[in-house]
Length: 434
Image (cartoon, rainbow, N blue to C red):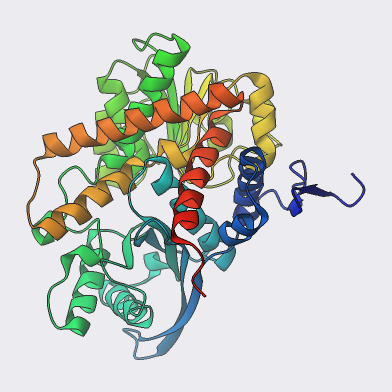
């Protein structure tokens, strides 16, 4: 196609085979969006609405550092779509935060909330900083000034942040307190992922990893694969990867490889996940762990295993290494671990991919539960949280799988079709305000 454009129903869309920048997260997200929109025969006006974020906010964050010097950080918050409810999305503190990344993550949150059918829209935010080089006091001042900078969008009915990369319960507590001080009364529903003592939900910390475990079990059942002794390699041994590994092992899976930013370890006889978690708690990383043979993060992705669970970074499975993937199932614990260009390679190999917007939606689902509990002032037991999470995740897997089989598309495309259909339906019902 000479002009590298695909025109359908008067919509100009990027060619589905064009990957100008494979590692640009927003472009990668839009390639998947375009494919699903084409299959849904999405009308041109709706296509334009859903392809653009509602709000993009960039704020300067002047902070007095412990040294007495003033530093100015940059904060970003993107509200991608709020047609189905308040914006929902994490806050990350990282030097690699960029507007393109935050836009992509906000869009992913929009589709993620829709695919599991919870009444939230999508958002994401971040501050460009290196939290590992900052004191607790400096982190608190950055958090509170960032919160004040975006406070006009925040609120339990408008925009509800949560923890993400390099943020945690404490950061959410600071955000909640800052917002509450501005409005003059305690509003615990303005953030999720808070400490339980402040209205956080039981089961929230384990929710994303638990959701991954549930999705792997559903995929195994669909493919007729036995669970007992099935081998799993986990890239990323943080909150998501370690909990998913622990829960999968408890279900009878054999965890043969784990890794973090320092590298990884493989043991064909199986790794004792609880022992590895204990080691990380004591040493901060897996570096020096002696219960397996050393392996790089890149090599871990190419191990012969039944299940590969990338739970670390974006863009780790690309056109450069997808052909070497030997796993039968990929469960995307991280956001965007597979590039758009790698999708067709994995399809050709027959790899069953559980896409990120389904696989790791357990976290936002229990964040929704936390918000509901805060709003109602009535709190559930952990058993109730886990049961309701299972119901939503299992039902969502079945809905995506049904759509995948009906339209003869992979699970990622089916998930996008389901999500886009739900968001566009609400837009049609609400109409365009003018």
